[in-house]
Image (tube, rainbow, N blue to C red; front, side, top):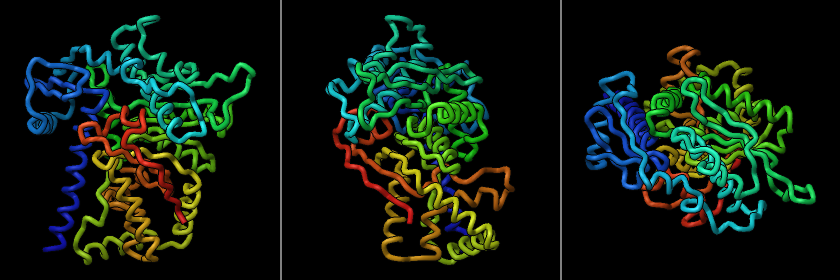
Amino acid sequence: MGSQVSLLHTLSISIATIVLFILISLVDDDHGCMHLSQVHCLKSDTRFTCTHYVPMHKMFVCEITEMSNATHIHASCLHFKESKSNQKDMDFNHSGHLSLRTVNWQSEQNRRSILASLVKGVYVMESDRQHHRQACQALAPVWWKSFNFHLSNVLTDDKDSSIFGAVYQLKPNPNNFYPIGAPRYVIAFRGTMLSKYNIIQDGKLDLKILTNKLHNTGRFEKAMQAVQNMVDEKGACNIWLAGHSLGAAIAMLSGKTMAKEGIVLESYLYNPPFIAAPITNIKSKKVKRVIFGARTFSLNDEKEKQQSKDLFTTLSLWVPNLFLNPSDPICSGYIRHFDKRETIESSGLEGIERFETQNSSEWLLSNDYFGNDYCSEELHLIPSARVTTSRTPIQQAHNLSQWFTNYSVSEPKVYSYE
């Protein structure tokens, strides 16, 4: 009985994580206020305003109630009004890293700030499209021109025609040389945007992340094709990837897919989703042994075990840059994951404890139980990473803007698979 309760407790954590992911994805730094049916919700640093609002904790209850009673969120239920604060958030002269006058591509801090700004440029391009800002009224170009990039290509979603990605090309110096340590091209992806133009499609993609089916979506396929084409044409050493939130998941899956082929791409992933409850949340050692035994039995073929190990070793050569905030429930799982693995590996533990660092309770809902078509390997399982953390307040924990400056940002720490 105790084992069953413990297992149910773990599954409930997974469900709670899913709900929280949806809510925070809908309300982050580039999104703000949503009018859902008769409920008005407001975020303090919102881009959008409503005539009425309820406190943040009540907003969660309202959203959960509405979403639990409907399979789809209809655009007719959503009402938005762009505010002046929205334009300020999009305006580089107000929100950008203006102090970065001289760019040093060999600086970790400069690279982090510039790549975050290029991702922001994708958000602003989509906002420009929605509000018909063109030519001199467009707010997006300064986000990449400030760092000597020009826009090479735009990626649009076939479902809602929204701009979700961009390919930027760095201009060479006047003498036709590129700065040391700089990329030639950056492929950047935005995250979820809360507007009547984006909420349905972006929300569906967020759910695909939760069910580990992002790889089966048209947006990812289009992103992956763009990455593959650029690598084929320009060479892997010249291509960098970047993304925030949902966009970080797309960039991570793209980078991971290329890494499986032995192609390593420099990657900058801001607040990437980590949607899994570690099996360490199961308190019962008996249940842990059952899970470990079942998983081991499913890999009882020595050839399959070796293939799994070889894949993990191949992926370990890819060391993406992860930018995480411990107060952000969407991405903070990575911090616990790598810290736990480091502790276990340094102590020489094996068996169940080591297994916990490479797997999550998500596998209980994966192909071992529901067939191979349910989901592929977990998106968040990566062997190596260079982790940078930020200590901004919880209200800004998922904001892309926290990575523009060096305020409360740590030095990177490298986790390598051995």
